[in-house]
Every structure is written in C-alpha cells, then in structure tokens.
Image 1 (tube, rainbow, N blue to C red):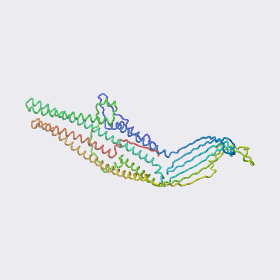
Image 2 (cartoon, one colour):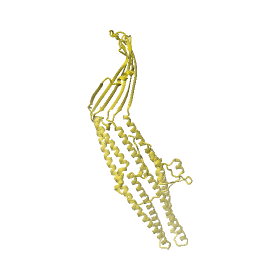
Image 3 (tube, helix red, strand yellow):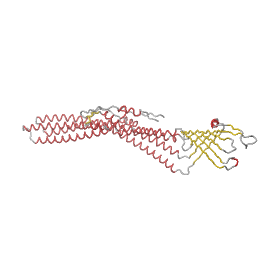
Image 4 (tube, rainbow, N blue to C red):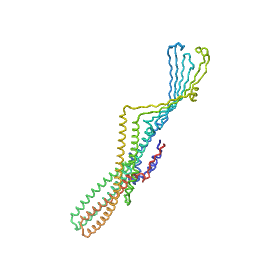
Length: 519
C-alpha cells in the first residue's frame, strides 16, 4: 500500500503563500489567514505529526508481506570416504558423492493455511560395484497444502496484522486532522488576543489623552482663578494612573506577539528582524444563527477524536474475535501430492551373469529425471488430520478475558467522548449566542458613554459640573470601549471554537487530507 503524493499535496499548495515582509520599519503585517498558513507550514508540532500517517502506511506494507510468496532455495554437496566393510563392494575404499538441491515456492492463503510447490532432487555417485544406475539422479515435484480447521482458521485471524495496520493508519490521519484543527484554533486565539491587546492599547491612549486635555484645561483655569489648585492635583493623579495603564497595555502587546510568533514559528532571521507584528484583520461582528441540532450532527460526523475511538473499538473487536478463536483446539488438514523421476547412467549386465562386469552403459541426465517428475508418471498422495488438545489454556483464557474487558472499556470511552462532545457543542453554541448579546449590549453602553461624556464636558464648560464627574465618565467610557472590544474578540473566538468542536476548521479553509490506498 502506498499513500499517494496527494496526501499532503493539497496542504502544501495552500501553504506556499508567504505574506509580504517590510524590512524598512521592521514591521510584519499579517492577516489571520497568513498566520494560519504559516503555522500549518512551519509549526513544529504539525511537522512532527505529518510523519505518522507515512509511518502507519509503511506498517501496512510490512503486514502485507505476510501474504507475499516466498522462494526457498537449498543446495548441498557432500563427499564421504570410508574403508570397505563388505566384499560385494569390490573396492578397498568406498567413496560416495552426494549433491542435493531444492527450490520451493510457499504461499500463505487468506483462510489461514499455506501451500507450497517444490522441486527437490539429488545426484548420488559411488565407486562400489553392482550399481544399476551410477550416478543416479532423483527429482521430485511436490505439492503440499496445510489448512487449520478450528484454531487459526479464517481471514480475520490471518489478516489481523493488515486490518490493525489499516485502522492505525486511519487513526493517524484523524490525529493529524485533529492537530491541524487545534493549530488553527491556537492561531486564531493568539491572533485575536494580539488584536485585542493593540486595540485596548489604543483605547488606553485615548483615555490618557482625554485626561491630559483635561489637565491642560484645569491648569489654564487655575491660572485665571476660575478653579482651585487642588483640581490640578486630581487631574495629574488621573494622568499618572492612565500612564501606568499604558505601560501594562504595552506589555500585553509584547506578550501576545511572542505567543503568536511561537505558534507560526518565525525563522530565526525573521524573528531577529521583526520588532512588531501588525494584524491586518479587525474583529467584526456579524449576526448569524446556529442550530444546536445541526452543530451536534456535524460533530458526530466530523470529529477526528470520535472517528479515532471508533477505529480503536474496531481493533478491539478484532482482537476479541482472535482471542476467542484461540480457545479452540487445533485441527489441521494436510494434503500432499508428489511425482518422482529417476535417471542416470544405467549399467548393462549380461543376462547370464548379473554379478559380472557391465557390458555397456545407457547414459542419462538430471534433466531426464526432472522431465519424468513433471510428467506425473507416478501417483503418490497423502491426506491427514492432526488434532491437538491443550491440557492447560490458562494464558489463552486470560487473553480472551483481557480482550473482552478492553472492548468494554473502549465502548464506555466512546460513550464518554460522545457525552463530552455534546457538552462542548452545547457550550460553544451558548457562547456564540451569549457573546452576540454582549456585543450588542456593550455597543449600546459605549455609545451612551460617549454621549454622556460629551454632555458632561459641556456642563463643565458652563460651570454645571465638576472635574470629578468628567474623569469618572472618561473612565467609564474607556471601560465600555474595552468591554465592547473584548466581546467582539470573544465572539470571533466563540465561532472559532465551534468550528473546531464540530470539526469544520479544515473544510472552511479548503484544506483536505486525502488518502488513496491500493488494495
């Protein structure tokens, strides 16, 4: 089996795009899709996981070798020399020369048996007397078939290694899909957190600028005697606090950048050059409806972890079937058929003196004996049954009990995954609905805060309000803007979580992992 190049090709084609890099100001402008592409191409966890399907495919090829035909070739040559111990040998020193050889093709069959076709022969030569054929060539064409009838019978047992390897391949592919979806979500989370940090920094800057404007205004009014000097101290204190908020917001940006850089795995050269990552996408809120039933149905069909557990249960069911088969006694059927052929140099003795010296010789060759063997001149066969009853099978029974418990455990784990999946989908849908309401509520709160601050500033200009209320409304407006931004980022992340939860992350970006197996 071989996974075709298209297994990763679609992914590679998608990942070839590289965002532009501006070295002049050392700023890297990236969209969300740019970051996703970089992460899928360069993330180390993804790079490691991509190897597992290939390794699993190699295991399938290895398992299939069990059914590959095997050629066995044997060759031997022997010479013996011994003193004669019998007068009829007519020689003082007996020299025997033996040359033997064989070639066999052995094939395992899916039913659990094996068959073999072999050709074996030998050449024997001696210097003793009274030999009818010397040297003699003997060749035998033989067919053997052995088939288990109880234990080890059936394709389930014989193909167990291949089936498990295939299941492991499916598991590894689903595991890769899971890692890709987790990586995409991690990118989205890091990207939107960076967007929030930058936008929150801008909100803090606006709030600081409002406080500074008010401080300048108070200073001018104190100079003309319109306000007491204490108002300057109050404004300066607020400015100092908001400058501290700016420092904290800057630190959050740096931290968020580092997290995103780590996920997209910037090269050392880029990491040294890039001082700032600027997200080009902004959080948007689009009201969309989502059905819990639809999301749950998608999750049951797409979730890689659910498919992995189902494949694992298939493997456990197979192991249980094999363990049950091993409880049976061993009963093997054996069939054999063979055809011999003999040839060589045949000595011709006088009819009236068979113990005399030969009067002639008919030459023969090894090929003659091979030819006779293939002519099937002689009918030789055997059939037999062999029954083996173990006197103790404690280990086999233990294996069966263990396999049954493993299957029960896997089925319970599947039910637990399905329950967790339902909870995750329900939480994701609820988060989307909740964040949609939050965005609308905080948007209204921000708009009202802007109007209220504007009205309070006008009142302050005509002496109907105080700096205290203006500073308070400024702080409330900054909080409202931050909360609106937070709710929009949370809404985007809620949709990203739903896509990951139902297993839709790859399909949304047209990233497909396809495998084509030669069966």
